[in-house]
Length: 206
Image (cartoon, rainbow, N blue to C red; front, side):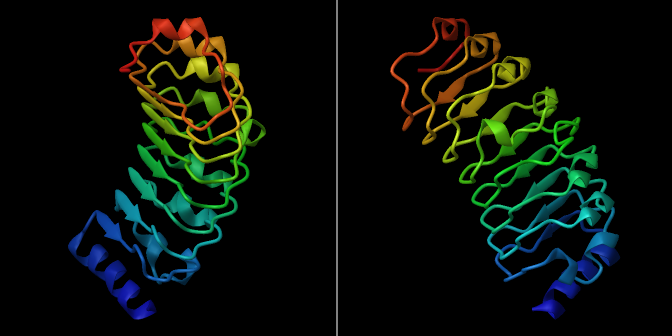
């Protein structure tokens, strides 16, 4: 395993390849990939369908990352250093074992798409500055344990898509009506019986 991953790293460095795909390689630790954190030039890193249980603080060394895909691993926590990825636009953490997000997570200034589907998150899992992610266009929180959505959701004014399927939501905050660009709201599989009238302000595609 390690030789082929080493080869991917070497080729990326020698040929200045910006997209590194290490999906489905049986990787259990990013620290086992020789030279990975020296690839400060890469813009896309795909580590989906592996066996990762954590993300090392060295992730901050990959400072040009725009796309980071950890879909379908066993990650239980993230380092605070992930929020120093100033260029990150697309972060996929779907199908992992996260039950909280690190302090400072909301200081990702370029993040547009955040996928947290199929984790163990709830409203208490979100750090205080989560709703500073004002560049977000799509937020996927389906298949988690949310019973409520914080009223600060109204601060994410660029949101066009929110997916909240299969949680334990009983209601939505009226502030969701402040999301003037919202086009898709997925709320199937919750416990809601009514929706806030403020939703009428959104340009939702029914």
